[in-house]
Amino acid sequence: MFWKYVGRWVLMAIAVPVGAVALRKISERIERKKGPTRVSRLLQRAASTLSTNKSRRGLSRA
Image (tube, rainbow, N blue to C red; front, side, top):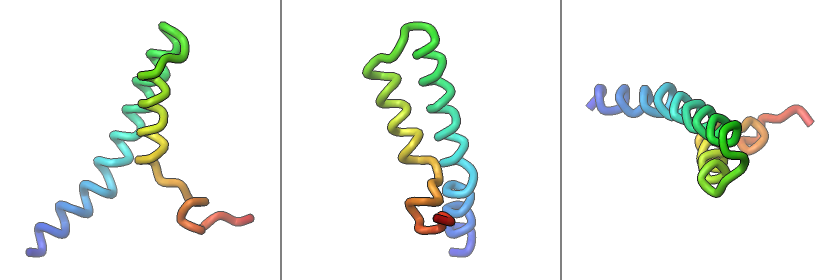
């Protein structure tokens, strides 16, 4: 049971942010090569959704 929670934590703490960075890099490469496309915008949106956003969590210092 404990390892199930550790695995979930590793996924959320490491794999998801790394995936967001990878999606953003792929999107930037596509945009550099072909300009903005539907795919590059979709990848940017997915990366934004996956990335941690302090203002969405209510931790911003406004």
